[in-house]
Image (cartoon, rainbow, N blue to C red):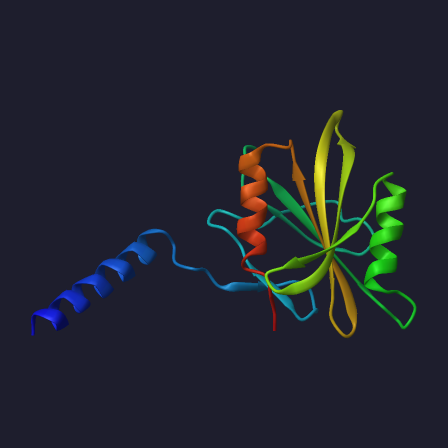
Amino acid sequence: MMKKTVAFMLTLVFALGLFACGGAGEPTRLGTSDFSIVLPEGYGPAEDVMDEDQIAYYYKDDESIDFDVYQWEKDGQYTLEGEANALAAFYGTTAEAVVVNGLNAMKYVSLEEYEGNTYTVVNYLLEDEVYIVELCFWTVGTPEEYSDIDAILNTLKKN
């Protein structure tokens, strides 16, 4: 009986802890692709002047990273590696193959200017059968921001 009581209490403490922290959150599908992420607490879609192929912009506050999501059809002419290399070359950097939460991806880091400030943008590209999806995380280059990127990417799933 004591083991059942202890197990019940541990389960209750764990459940209350998840409730207090907002739980794991619901997956957010990335456009019409097969990919989804769980947005961290406080993040949500925000208004943005969308670039070509941009499908979402997620924002929390001025002290946190924000990120853009792009999606475009492969149409039998675009490949993950080819697109990553072309985008990286445009920004004067190189792309590398990486594995993100068990999924093959490409990554490149660019320096981009916005409203007079220069940001380090960490970009990840993935592909499903139909689409290429790009996540662009805007940072000022702190270890905490890179940790936040990793936390978001650790929720990435292919549905």
